[in-house]
Image (tube, rainbow, N blue to C red; front, side):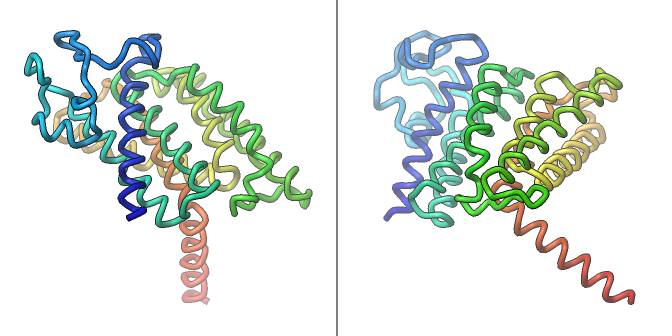
Length: 269
C-alpha cells in the first residue's frame, strides 16, 4: 500500500518536474500561468494533468486540439514514480528518503534540460551548490560516512565534500581550457556539484561512469550514422546518471570492486 503511495507521490513530483523542465530554460514562472497546451494555448483542467493516467487516457494527445503531447511527459512521471518507490522500499519514509528524492529530482531536471536544450542552468546549479555546502557536514548522519585526514566527523564530511567538489571543478575546467569543444561551462559547474554531493572517492566513480557511458553512446550513435564526428552531444545526462548511481549505491559498488580486486590479486599470488 505504501509502495503505491510512494509511486503516486513520485509521479506527482514528476509532473511538477515537467513544468520546471518546460519553463526554467525560458525564464518563466513555475507558478503562473497554470499549465497549458503548447499548441493551442488552452489551459489544462485537473483531469488533463493526472500523472501518468491522463497521458495514457488521452493517448498522448491534447484533449482540445489533438496535438501530440511529448513522450517526455509520461517518461518523467513514470521514472520519478518508479525511483521514489525504489527509495521507499530501501529507506522507508524519513529524512533519508526526503534527501534522496530531492537529489533524484535535481538530477532528473538537470539531465533532461541539458538533453533537450543543451543547457545546464546556473539558476539550478548555484542554489544546489549552496544547499549541498550546508548539508555536507551532516552526510554521516545519513549513513554516508566520509573521512578527511583523521578530523572529527562533521568537519571531515565537510572537508571531504569541499575537496572533492573543488577538485572535480578544477579538473573539468582545465579540460575545457585545453579542449574548448569538448564540454561547456555548465559541465564544469555540474562536476563541482557532483563532487560536493558524492565526496571522495565517490566523485571518481561517478565521473568515470559518466565518461564510459557517454563514450559508449557516442560510439553507438556514430556507428548507426545518427551523429557525425564533429557533432556534439550533451554530457550532462551522463554526469547526472553517474552521480545518482554513485549517491545511491556507490559504497556497494566500490566494496564489490575492492573484493574483486583482492580476489584477483590473491589468485595471482
